[in-house]
Amino acid sequence: MRSKLPCLIVAFSVLLGSVAITAILALKNAGIPETRFNFEPILEGWEVKELPIGPNEFLEEVTEEILGFSYCRNFRFQRRSECFEVFLSFWGKGTASEREVAGHTPEICYTRQGLNLDRKTEISNRIIDIPMWLLEFSHRGEGLSLVYFHLADDRVVKHGRSGSPEFGGYLKRLLSGELDFKKRQLLVRLTFPCSSLPAESVRDHPELERLIADILTAYQL
Image (cartoon, rainbow, N blue to C red; front, side, top):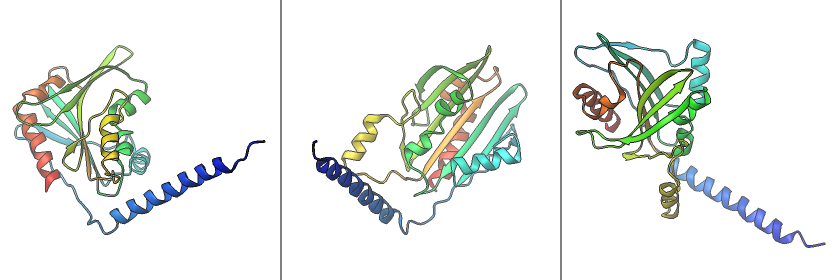
């Protein structure tokens, strides 16, 4: 019978390494000042209505507990036949890792609700210089389009088709010694339930540009 000692040594080394990394991250996050985010939307000519996070108070409380965010708001903007919705969620430093937040991107959440992801395209805006994802879903003959972006500190987190951060970038930061992934993070989702205002409008719509710029300004303060 082969000795189990090598296996025990490997297991103990892995455990010791995990404990060491946990301790390092705890020390790095200790004493970090609380970071805040607050946004009150103002878009001239548009009616703004705040929507609940969940369909009822119970699910809203459960949603907040699961997501663990520091701040979350949901708004609907309406102007005649045009409408869009903006969902903002913010995590302060030391609250959640990039991969934890990535578990709540539309690729994950919407497909778990039974929608099919038909298209995913990286798009950009002529003024706002950050990559955004355009997603198109379908379910029982109905379509839904949305655009979202995810920031960790001031860096854009790019996601693969599965919704997780692109592995190459994650591995590069890990190898460079950036072990603390619990950055200040912002996830912004713009949903377009009205066909009169397509999701592609984010590319060059001046009022959407202004709104996104205001959100980014509030995040950077």
